[in-house]
Amino acid sequence: MLQYEVGQLIDGRYEVLGTLGQGGMGASFRARDRSTGREVVVKIPSIALIGDPGTYSRYQRELEIARRLAHPRLQNLVASGQLPGGAPYMVLEYHQGRSFREVLSERGPLPIDECVSLAAQLAETMEHVHENGVVHRDLKPENLLLAPSGDLVVLDFGIAFLQGARRLTFHRLTSSVGTPDYMAPEQVSGERGDARTDVYAIGAILYEMLTGRPPFQGDNALAVMGQRLTSDPRPPRELRPEVSPQLDTVVRRALRRDRAERYGSAAALREDLLHLDAVEPDEPGPATHLGYAPRGDLPRPRTIALILVVVFGALGAVGVLAELVHRAQGGQ
Image 1 (cartoon, rainbow, N blue to C red):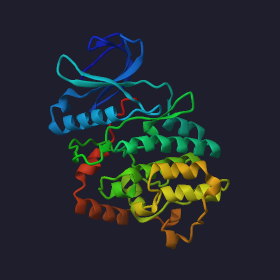
Image 2: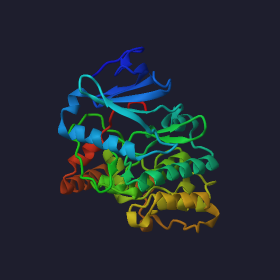
Image 3: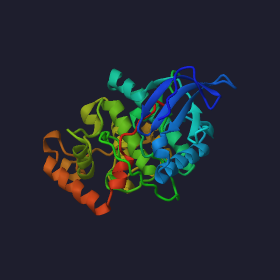
Image 4: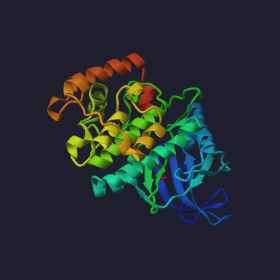
């Protein structure tokens, strides 16, 4: 791992102001571009990993994705280069703000109007991403930054993919696996996903903004994933009665287990969020009809484990799980 102290220069140009994150995958530094005076983020992958063809291909994919995208609420690419020792690096915009996870943890359920506004923002940003053939696949509060302006900035395209590009499998596993609270059912089943996968994640984030909790909860990742395959979450209106029937419908539609029943695009989700009065409410039916399970009737852990063993075994999804392994976020 390359180590840089405050005041040192990266590639003779970027003066290190601090470390944003460091882990097995690489390091991210807040720096000042001496040629422009602008604050930036410099991301450097681990030297130990960059020699692996798969890891290097993933870095190249992330760089290619960054070059395609340009939006005010994305952490856009500024430059890229190679260090004297051969390690590549990319330079991204630095955004002031707070992790959206910290915001949710501190403020609990947010005001409903703010929830709708932020979700519509996020959907509009993802419209741009999807229009450029990119699917993020890892939208969650930890990968969002709430700027002082009120903008919700999307970070970290490390496991995003380009539509039409060959699949990359990440082989290095760690013992630290994040709870997959925002994974769509198709991701749990080992599928690659599409724009509707990100729509599901937006719905899950909106659900947490409204209720103060993610759509599914469990003692471990397997329990959460099992619930996602076998049941739907409790309607947000049950947990927060002031949520309107129209907004409740929008959230549940974004969280449909079957992609064909979900919003077909982030644009369609955003349209309904901006025009809730025009949404035709569809009240949830009995649990046995919609499949959502009250807390006392959640699948037993043994049943959940059996479901997941069958699913992952049938699909050979070790690579998928590896891609979803908790990675060093690198701050920004």
